[in-house]
Length: 308
Image 1 (tube, one colour):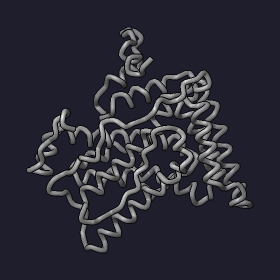
Image 2 (cartoon, one colour):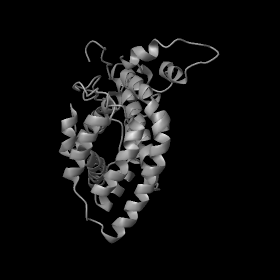
Image 3 (tube, helix red, strand yellow):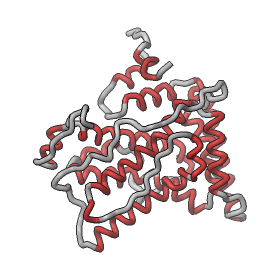
């Protein structure tokens, strides 16, 4: 059943309210409706309820073991190419369609947030490298590693351009939301009996595998990139003159990096922060926040939903 229909059709018993339905109906946090439904259906799954408590401590134990192993043989098993082939196979065979939808969508969301910053700082000429997978085969193109590289490269290029030109990040005269999309062209995802693994359990299983097949430097960079959410949110908040946007981020600032043991949980927070930030940009694009648009850009004309 479609995740939205599943949550909408849940009966309401005042003596036993469904917490996932309550979260779905709540609109305090901006989020794409289908994405929110997929996340909550994934969160309420039996896999997350019964498998995650077993998988998580085992995964963290392997992270410690692999870290110790890499002290003595740092690059013995490293291969980003084979890592991503293994990840593509694991996602296709074991991971639920809701979780795979969230994973593929995340690359589009991240690319469009960076694109929004670049479009609204055109004078800096900061290049972007968008990642837009439409199916799980595209995972083999090393998109997880490239996603992490894109984040750090963008921060370096943006701030070097600001420094070289003697500028600071300021709101543009007119905001450009043309690169922010309502939907992404994702193909139908596998939905066999083996596709039962929820997103959090899958992340916990894949994190030590990710660590094993990457160099120690690549793995640490991937883990620390999760904390760039606050940095990116500050950039967007500056362009929109909406400092409250930073409140959407729960990953803490990257200048005080957290350990890799909780990388799986922080990856979930990373996905939630990115989705909320992207949804906020969509609200602005469609003129559903006219006060903000009026403050930032007096000449800005909100696009209608039909024209977007």
